[in-house]
Image (tube, rainbow, N blue to C red; front, side):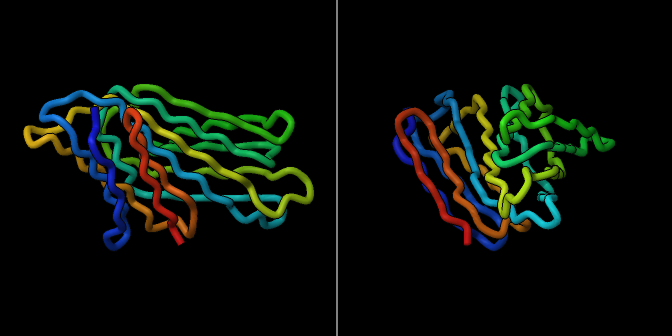
Length: 163
């Protein structure tokens, strides 16, 4: 069981630190929620160098106030998937993304008269604390203007407001 979770901003990254028992296996959940501005019914977000350090993982993207959601991930080439919204909501998910660093583009068409798109990206993974009972994860926020970032493990949670 994780004893503490802290999040601190260092330059253009958030550093999530979990502390618990040495070599403990945990389920970590990370989530960012942000409001993306809509311009001519279009929205867009690009994030570079997102780290995927654990291979047993899940990623889910939920967008609200959308007609269409396009998700692109650069593995070696850009892989793009477009999802039609249903009643203003679109969801896309991936499982077991290989370890590495990825560039991600999220874009699409908002519903008529929407000023913002509510975007919620959540990731979960099975990870192991090191021999000192610590796990650090760095999340690049260089392209994130504002939003709420949350980290959870077991019954512990921490959040950081990006502004």
